[in-house]
Image (cartoon, rainbow, N blue to C red; front, side, top):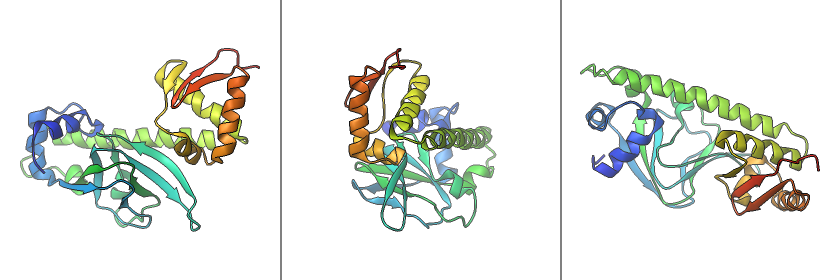
Length: 227
């Protein structure tokens, strides 16, 4: 992988390299043996059933983590932006079959890092390598909390209840009643496992009832939800 300032800037903002200086990251690239790959929009990066030994770190573009069934029904589990990582849970369990697919939502570049080299101290015993392992553990715990939140939304019975659960959670995350969500309408429907038309109708009903306002992916929640 080339070590220019743009790549180092993205790596430095990634939670995987939190607390590690740019010069230390550059030094670590030698022992981590990163493999940079490019993907076109809608191209699969990883497929259901694959086994992994490397963590994917998104350098540019955006990717979607997708759950697909036998009949091709799709449910977006997460959307990744530059600096985010994916596949870490499966890479940490040797031989585990990937239970999701990862697809490029736009033209993207992904840096693959061997998880064994992350978890094992290198020969030079660099002091910041242990920090990298700690960061990976924190990411695994954070994503477990994320999946628990998604499960909370999915457990709601109706499309309206799922929407309100999700939007309420986003409001708490942004500490504001007005916020942007990372999904377009189809992606949001896939994420919540609801029909897009039914979801759009429900959003319009809630807007007309004064529960919320929205413009594309920007939402504002009203205080008087009892209506």
